Image (tube, rainbow, N blue to C red; front, side, top):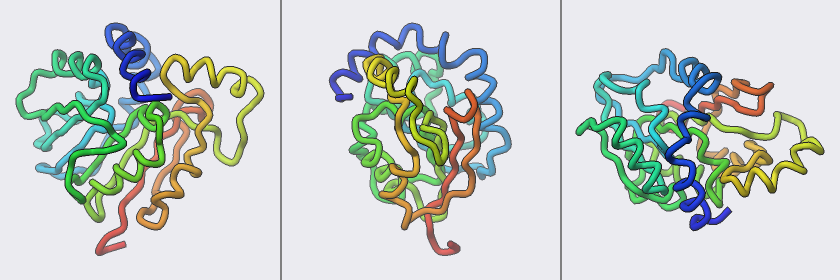
Length: 209
């Protein structure tokens, strides 16, 4: 997938995205994923690939310093209209080349973004780069089942689904290799569709790790 195609396909998705991915089982999953996060008031939180802002409600009115980026201006426009909160800093930005200094954020949320960007390894590396030492990242995304290969059905469907703007054939641990010497994974939990969608939490190694 190329950035130019992503920009076009998510322009098409933006008016209806929430009907599919912020409703029903996806909304239920988000409520569970973001429950009881151990974040202190004043924490700097970054949403990478914020989309239409489906994850934002779980972080509002808690005293966090929130920044939200997305490559799609159309998806970002929807998020801004839904959450016209002046304390949220919305930015149009490529997750593969973030315009932030090293170690800028305490907590980073990456929902359904590694499966969308052209280069997930570069994106994960950027996430870890801008994360503070001892800071955490939370990934909610679809990956090939742990310790398994793609099924025949997935192999057939993969190019079709990629045409629609996402990839169902990624192995998280292959992506993770680029940052494994900098991080510690503390959770890898099946969330939806028998483990196709997972919640993964990691901590960037620092003074106490």
